[in-house]
Length: 445
Image (cartoon, rainbow, N blue to C red; front, side, top):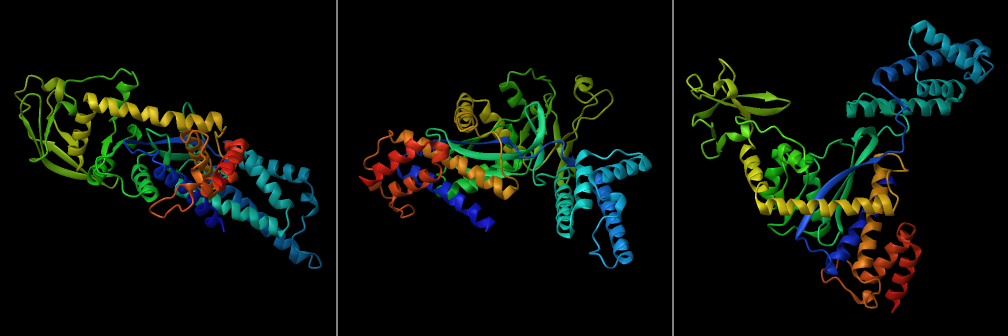
């Protein structure tokens, strides 16, 4: 049933994209992908580390063992009653304090609450607490983070501005000219690096194949050799700055060293570098780092070079490391330095800022009320469905007597007017009751 609701909201969102396409609102002249951290419905303080989880489970297992022993001693009872010294919350708290003194460790408030709930609960409640701990242990292993939330174990600690908080990473792809969101998703990954390809695939799932040469921009968080190659292979005209370009665009001072790697020309055909002094560095070795192959280039005559101290270091030989995506990085960097590159990349900010501003300030959506990746995806789809409906309503002049007559020649949306009314009525709490009523009247004309 949970999967059903996720799919249902995905289909509703997809319908708004289809309607925008049929109405000629989506232009696809330039699209942008971006992400934003959305606060999870979880407190940073109600968390436990891997070690704390193990310690609590050990304490609870010992407590269960005592219950079993009590059951054997008092066979005429259920077997899960507390002994007299632990039959009130106050006594349990004193017992926890004794455990803390004996171990020399302070337990977190979250740990104490779980122990208290476990000791006071019946067998069913104890089982739920053990399930919660197992889920938390499973998620902390997946995330490899320092702690896990007990409120929402599927949330992750993410940096948002100057804060680090439990959050989810919301992703969108937006049509620059119309403001229509073409694709959206929520991920547990803290960075955007692996989200570009899924966003392109979702966009094509909603719209069909993107035209060759479609311009697409993303910020430096999406910059990787894999992404650059993917865009080239798809025939998409990408605009993504490397880290140095991104820093400069933010107005930050970047040290421009005369012998940094970008000052060495790269020959893609021969797979070699040419240093500023005219010496060649040839690929002569490779090694594996974090599961990826790294290539090493050297062989220049550094011994007689007057720039050796500044380039390689006194008495050292200069080498350069790279990978299989060096050519793609060079092509992107060169494009981003052009006037056209700067103009196209500037559209990213125009495209992305106002949709996020709309949902956060106008729709008051700054974080999730639901918990779990499936539930937050439902909420995320719903809010972007509301955004698209507002854009459609505005783009269609807020008065659409012929809306109900529109038909999609592809057959994917048979009654556009009726479909919009149905969608608007379901999300009218987000976009305003008046909009929903006006759409209903127009569709009946």
